Length: 299
Image 1 (spheres, rainbow, N blue to C red):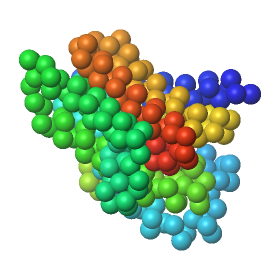
Image 2: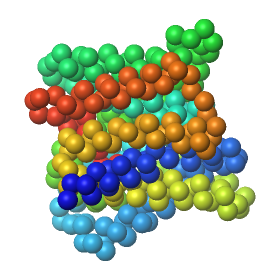
Image 3: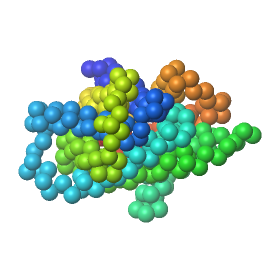
């Protein structure tokens, strides 16, 4: 029933929208970056790998030739995750989320400049709207403009890394079950956390219950539940409708940031977020085949 599909995708968007809010709450509670990343990836990897094995989604014979590709994908995704969490540290959660949502436009630029894809009128309009929206959300046109280089750089680098992740992931997502891809990448990211950001403080300073719940929420709601619901909606609605509906995630992030974090955005920033959403929707509603990169990926 299509109604169930819409419900799954909307619930997925709500769950995903909480990620920058959980990160921001964690920073407010003095949780370090390494601990936030560790809790998210350790918990989600354990749940997803258990789910993949229990449902027999993992086919080791077909997975083995792709392990190298999966490892590279995990490196890129981990870099994106690190830049994104740092963006939420340096700027408002809602603004960090808006900058991250520039990734479809970045992919469009890469595909046009590097892979020589045709730049249609709709794609050009989409690109212009997203760029304009990003300039508006960082308050470039405001008299009170204060350039936050760290936040902007981290937000856009997170979007760039995610764009590269999507481009490289188009082929592997067609060859391996999405749940398997998610489980493997979160597991590899867990190893990167240990190697690059050893969560020493998580063991030297015991977490309080609220601190632990923030990490648990980022793993269960924003990773496991969000992705599972998205895939369930995808199966019922198809990629095009699912990807369009999922753009409401940005609106939910703004709402949660206002409700939970008391973040207030200016009218210009709100218009900027609307411009970004409009640009993404235009890109996804081309009459020709919808580009793979305009659809929300597996993770």
